[in-house]
Image: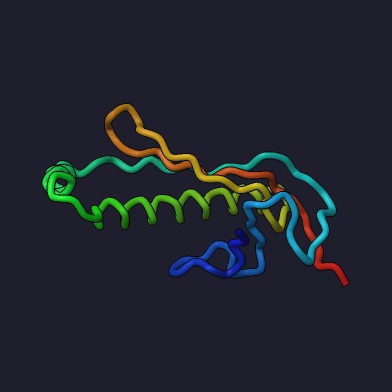
Length: 123
């Protein structure tokens, strides 16, 4: 899955920065590997949202507020990862992954990580 210009809203890859979950980028060659990069965000829980989600989980259905918050957290973590890669001189990240975990029962931690690389389009 390539994340080249597919995000809505603030798109960290809109400037041609390549982010992919695969090892290779079709149509590109990797010229240099800069190392691991990551972006991290921790969002606190909202007591009222948790109460509403608790009722919704009993009745069934999507927890839209939590889905929206998680999507925003993923985008923020992705943006931070891309920013870190750019500071290393990279123009891409390969093998990108997301990790989500509970942050001491106080919130949700979202981490985007991968390998920063310099890529060039094949002629």
